[in-house]
Image 1 (tube, helix red, strand yellow):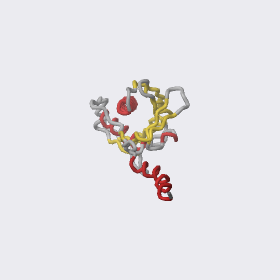
Image 2 (cartoon, helix red, strand yellow; image 1 turned 90 degrees about the vertical axis):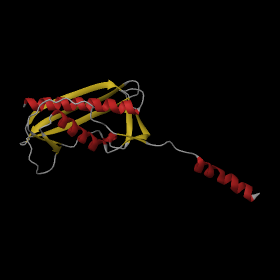
Image 3 (cartoon, rainbow, N blue to C red; image 1 turned 120 degrees about the vertical axis):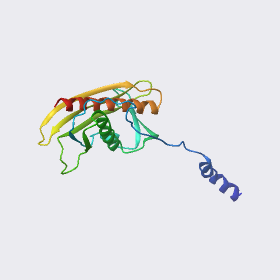
Length: 188
């Protein structure tokens, strides 16, 4: 009888050994397949770390309906890299595509540069079969700290039915921000 009771007590533990959890999927924001050249001007540009809301500082991809306080954190759909780092590198890549003769790097202490690009993201989200959206502002600053240009942005794009299409929509909008920055730098 004791063996039977012990087996009954162990049964839930053994079931856990044989059940499976879903595999995690990892996603990257990407440069667009086709890029727009804005200018062939030679200029040195530094890109500061992107400021993102604290709730986005996690590996899980977060969904949020527009105008809703509710967040859905997807445990098994994750960013393949730190989101801040990925956004900064993607912005550098998109700017490099738009300004092919420019030297564009992350901002580093003591680096010589003509301008610094600063971006503050307030919202970066969306919902399946609705819209993805990004909202924030950017500044272009000279080496003396003077703001040469600044702009608010509030972009939306159809999100599609799954994480792949959602991430692609975010990538497209992030490229639009880069093109806008590149066009402004070209006019300075």
